Image (cartoon, rainbow, N blue to C red):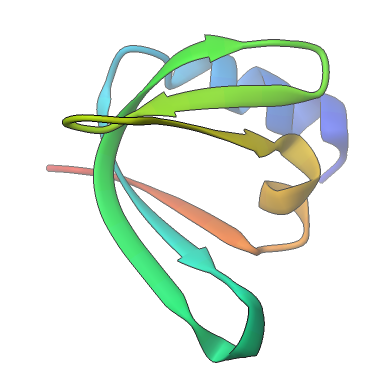
Length: 71
């Protein structure tokens, strides 16, 4: 998979309720539900219940972020 495929996949998931699993530093894992609301050239924005977070497409590419359908 390359960055362009990741961008296209993210674009197709916009405005859907999704589950995110973030593999952070020092083995910290954060999980939350949210919606991809914006996508730009280098980042995409996820809105949760009360905040917005931005992530890069490369985070998805190197498996630092897992995105799953919330169903």
